[in-house]
Amino acid sequence: MKLFGLIKEDFLNVKRNDPALHSTFELFFNYPGLWAIFYYRIAHSLYRRGLRFLPRFICGIGQFLTTIDIHPAAQIGRRVFIDHGVGVVIGETAIIGDDVLIYQQVTLGGVSLNRGKRHPTVGNNVVIGAGAKILGNITIGDDAKIGANSVVIKDVPAGATAVGIPARVLQCKNEIESTRLSHNLIPDINKEIFAYLVKRIEILEEAIESGQKENLKKKDQDLDNNYDDFIHSMD
Image (cartoon, rainbow, N blue to C red; front, top):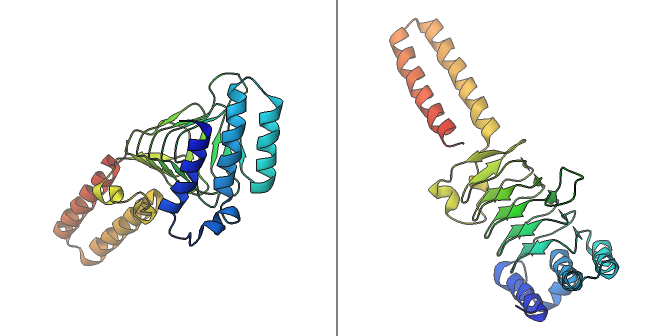
């Protein structure tokens, strides 16, 4: 698709996907992510023609106006939407697929000073939560979700969910897949483990007080089964 077509599609994408938009006029003042992509599209087109200073200068203007830093050499697909956008950083060798949703404070960064591919590759239909850091030459598969404030340093399979620091990969469940924006359905790993430990202590205290070992064994087995189901949902 030609440059003008890509830019037009970016503007229409906001109208289709953001219920907070009430008029076209708002696009000019309330969507820094849209304008960061706009400046990037122009700079990237020039960068592909062999220019170097001018594309960096254009992206520098975009960064000053939007607080979003996108290197002109990065490869960004169609209908990518940076929502709210403040503090987003997308590195030089990053590759982003189509229909990706990125929230504020996200970093697609490198962990090496060597030349070559050193930034992430993000597939299609991926959702990256606010504050997430995806670092290094890793791959985020199609339809994956990255939880808010997660630090991802390993590949995430297609359709999976990654949460935590460092991020742990969860196998998708139907309730998580129900909608792209169901961040409230992404499990809290630390909370689940803490709840498991608290429940086990309660079972032990009850057994000590009552002296009924039979009930202890049954409750303990039920708790272990639930914990195993949770652990097996992760890679």
